[in-house]
Length: 296
Image (cartoon, rainbow, N blue to C red; front, side, top):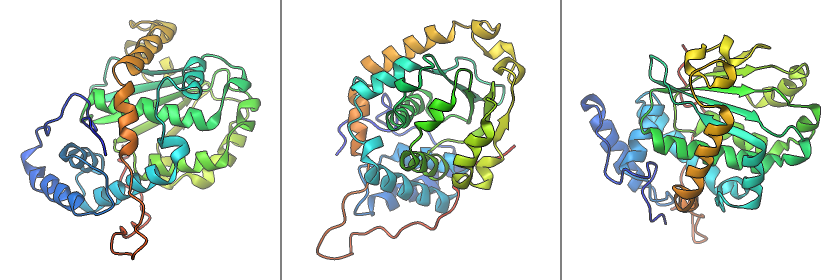
């Protein structure tokens, strides 16, 4: 059972809900409390998932069920969420994961990811997925209800040796989670400095990508400044903000100091095991459906 405030670390009380959606948030919260195998989801979870699912109640229920099930069935990614763990630290020291400070006019947060150490031996794929999910959970906590997210993956420095270290099991979990259970509105995914072997990458992941997510992907051999404009970017790309490495170091420190206990506590947000004396406490599995990512 969790002991801290989730999904927003500093918001133990329910956030204000738009009046036109208050009834659905209340209804979802009551439904959540009636699910015998659900963890201690809060009313803020109901708000967050409904917002992510464009206020569709059925889609939000499916996303919550998928979230609880994936967390329970993938302990290698969602258990032992210690930011100071050796594998997570190795990932954070070999990558840059940064939430850029300026949002777009639409209110979208820009997230930027790249390698800082291009040695493939420094990448453990399972730990990378785990670290990525922890970073994103903390960012959701910081942002609250965010209108949307634009993700920039920078492939500069990625080699075929990195591709060889990808493990299909964690990759499948990650794709299922991002598409069916991650409680954000994903607006666009840019792959910049696209590597020459991008077709090999896509051959690996395309069977796991639904058409809605595929429609969000955009590839370019150019840098991020050609996509979003320098006004939103760090000095590395001619923008006004601190260098990527500086921002990464600051945000990593925040994870280690402000979010360490909170992230470990969040490991309890998972479906409880099915009781042996019958199926009464089993949640009916959700119909496989994409949870409604909005495409511009």
